[in-house]
Image 1 (cartoon, one colour):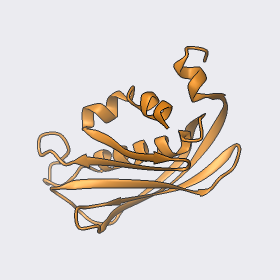
Image 2 (cartoon, rainbow, N blue to C red; image 1 turned 90 degrees about the horizontal axis):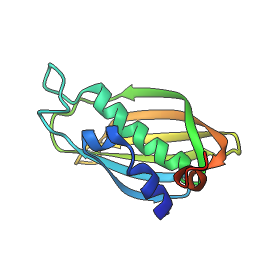
Image 3 (tube, rainbow, N blue to C red; image 1 turned 135 degrees about the horizontal axis):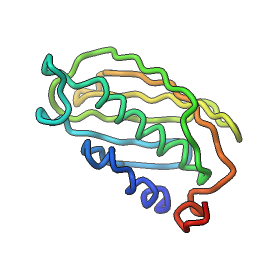
Length: 139
């Protein structure tokens, strides 16, 4: 899975937001983000929905590309279940239905206590090109 790590080291938004890739295996990824009051909070002082969404989207992207085929999001639905204003958020993306063209994923975002903060359901379209070919400049 080193090739997937190499591919996602190029994700500038994840780097800017402080999102860390913790684990990746076929069809699954774990990412986390330590909430920073200077970067991740909205006007109310709680984690911005966009920051939480970006964490979930990054975990989803890693999971759907983990098979080695370039994949892109087709649709994502996000439900925010609890407010959070400090600590570490963890996103676990898991393949719910594998498919050679359209695959479905469920992404769970939890807080330090393991409580569910948000839930995303997403679908990925698998392209013909591979991650390896992209990194080699062939795509």
